[in-house]
Structure formats: C-alpha cells, structure tokens
Amino acid sequence: MDDLDRRLLALLREDARAPASGLAAKLKVSRGTVQNRIERMLKRGAIQGFTVRARPELEAQRVRAIMSLAIEGERTAAVLKALRGFPEVAAVHSTNGRWDLIAELDAASLADFSRLLDEVRTVEGIGASETSLLLRTHRI
Image (tube, rainbow, N blue to C red; front, side, top):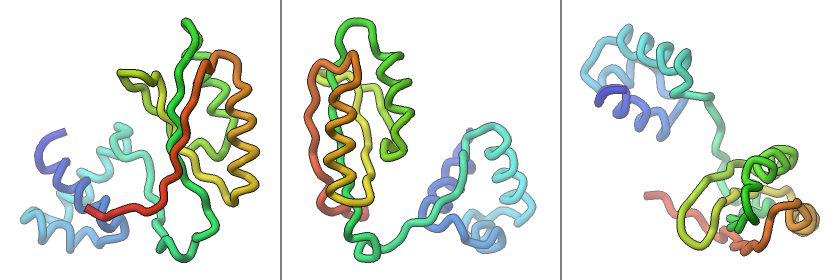
C-alpha cells in the first residue's frame, strides 16, 4: 500500500458510499484509478468489506464494551477459537502489558450482555478479565 491507497482508505472510512468520481476529485486522480485501487485492495484483503454506521441514538439499547483478558499459560489459540463462537465478539486484539487480549463486545441488550459476560468468563484458559462499558464514542 502506498500513500494514495492510505488516503483513499481514509476517505472511504469517512463515507464508504462516496462516488468514485468524488473520491477521484479529492485525491486529484482519475475515476478509473480510484476504481482500480479499490478493486485491488478488495482482492488483496486490505479492504475486507463495507459497513453501515447508524446514529447512536437509533441503537441506544445496544451495549458495547471492551473486555481485557489474561490468558493462562499457552492457551491463547484455544481462547481465540472459543471467542470466535460468540457473535457478540466483534473483534479481538493481542496486546502487551497486563492483558493478553482485548475483546470488543457488542450485545443487543443488557440481558444479552450479562449472559455474554457469564459465558466468556467460563472459557477455559481465561485467568482474569476486566470489562469496561463504552458509554460514548467521540468522533476525531
């Protein structure tokens, strides 16, 4: 990926539905260049898909959180496999420091969130966890 690809990705993050002609004008390249770059990034997996972001107030009942996990011994692969089985686990990140993994959680309701926490905490290989609710997202 070069600088043009990175700038194109930044524009797509702002509005994935932006027309290629508008993206091309902002990047000062041809529409064909934008289309070819997007197609190439899709084929290589740099772009994994497109999504919709709804206004937070439209999904006010959803519960989002970050769960920090300490893994016992060499059980990371098994824990990752188990976490893939939970549809509410949106992403898992390896990290350094006190916690081994950070899981992004997205549940439909508080009841679903509570059930998810109970189930994740029983996954063999998780030694400790700490969960923080995401109260508000600030656009930067």
